[in-house]
Length: 235
Image (cartoon, rainbow, N blue to C red; front, side):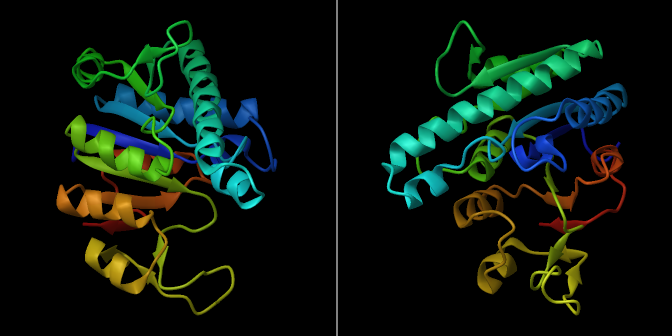
């Protein structure tokens, strides 16, 4: 295998499927089946899940809410998604642990780096919820931070719509150019919104490669994790 330990970044919208809001169980089950395939291939899998299908902190702040409070609500939304994904995986007999950056002992483990690594070494899928535990940071930054902490070989960023990184929005510009490979510094210089700038810089400084691919086909999770050339590779 090309990778040993991967971090899969799932947006909250990926769990909603074609719905505009909430969690759609058949989609969650399909994603869980692909994660099971990756695990059965021998890879160690950690997951960072967003919460945009339930709540977006930036949207709340734009409507007049206190930004920190809105962001904490978003963190709680990611925990709901993490629990839904855990349930789907465990129904497929995949051993799973949810770790949260905000303590909630009755719901999940508190994030401890050494414990997370130990779970991975034992073959458990670890799902990171509640972001970094701090407002003003996105789940993209969480994925970059956790990947660095657990020494993951790659971040697999599953996006809806686009099948990689383009020089402009392919939904608006038919002549948009897709990059097969691109560097982090070029992403920053060109202002491409692959990840936020904090996450991009963190990946660049810690030499963590990123594979951006389309989540609309759930089979792509297995293809990306097993090293098949897919989407765009950022390094």
